Image 1: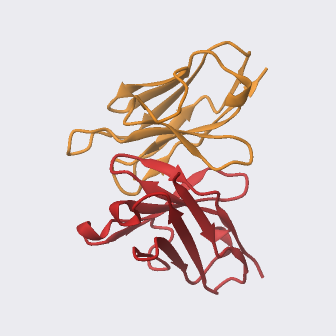
Image 2 (image 1 turned 90 degrees about the vertical axis):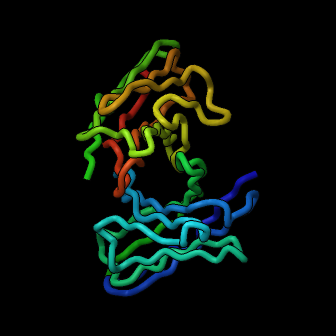
Length: 119
Length: 112
């Protein structure tokens, strides 16, 4: 069974940093690209970023709203994807979801982890 | 960026009756590889999103056949043939043909 478990969320002050982790199980992690999405309280879904699998260079794409502040990485030996979030703003407050990308579509979503940016 | 526009934003439906949601993109979603990466997701209250339909009309594993997707280019539709109580939630269309990936605003399906 495919499972994605996010962790690392919490309350953080504006300008500080936080690193989210996504621990995967039930599939060969290195064979898949991964993405992060977020959902602000009571709002719709927003794509955050995408990391290709290593065979395609493990390169990344980001939404304009997080580019140069957020960095995605992956450790295939541990089946973990990371989202390093720097210079956090109040508007980054959201539930952050980790997802698996199956080439043609995003097929599995984690349960999400809440990040609250507030002074 | 590609703008995705869903209509309606709210859809009260009687149990057992059909429902339909439209999604329009600001430009064609046909990728250079010939595929159209348009998906539909369902988000039940308090739950993460769940994939229903991918590449316009393909039902994901375990999705009931009362859900169907259609369309091409810039116009897409999700249909529920007979709404059941478990279908209550918000439905989103999402395009992954071009970065940044973008979503429609969401359509809330509720029971009358």
